[in-house]
Image (tube, rainbow, N blue to C red; front, side, top):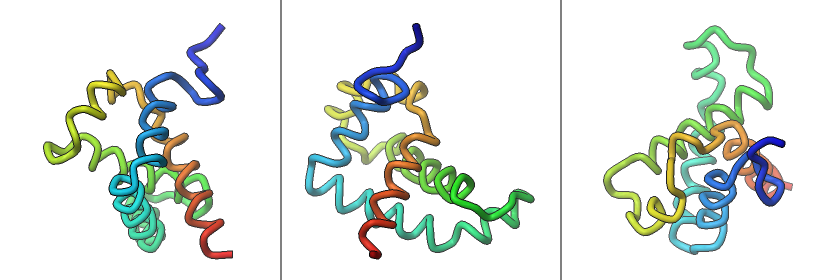
Length: 106
């Protein structure tokens, strides 16, 4: 049996996404980060020699979100609840927010 938790890769990923989706300030800032990362993901792919597609786009979004989460300005109480930020599945976070911004454009 794996680390899956409530349909997420693990408890840390589920907890972080729960906070990012349910706190208005965190939600709006995460949406801003996801939109910015999505807008420049083609250049990011060229820089890394990757094919521009939804997988690389989600990776870029997840990378930017987790960089913010690891920043000193991110709320400590959320980090305490998440536990180990290093266990958060970056791809899953990116996929979740790619879906959110794609739905918002329809």
